Length: 135
Image 1 (cartoon, rainbow, N blue to C red):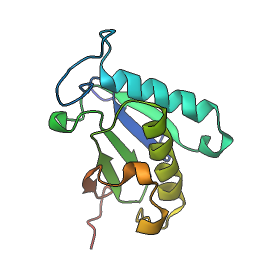
Image 2 (spheres, rainbow, N blue to C red; image 1 turned 180 degrees about the vertical axis):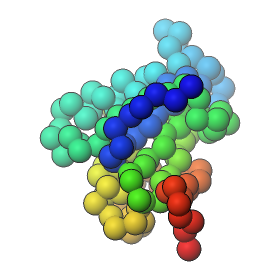
Image 3 (cartoon, rainbow, N blue to C red; image 1 turned 60 degrees about the horizontal axis):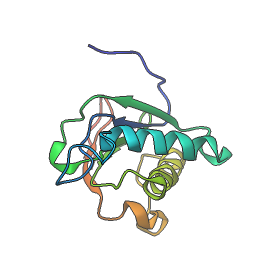
Image 4 (cartoon, helix red, strand yellow; image 1 turned 180 degrees about the horizontal axis):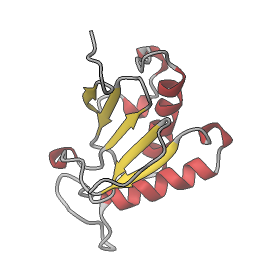
């Protein structure tokens, strides 16, 4: 059931997420999660700033009502699940920009003034790292 993955800063994207609240797939029959993974990888490959952030994927983050969901995580830091994205380059850029700030932060808390506009309003929950709870 578990597949080993890099234990560094990462965006784990649900590759089976709905395309939108109304539709499971787009006009081409592709799931939104698969489109978002493709957009994340395309944006990442085009900009060296994102080289330290792994783009990982898995089926279902169990946030189905919050289509196009991702988990931003890094060792020893509070992680965040975000969703309700349009699976496109703009969303991928905002997510990757946030992940860079997250990775550079001490405990995973990124000051609001550093949040890219494209992630505001997309946070679903935060997750503590193994062995910790947050204050």
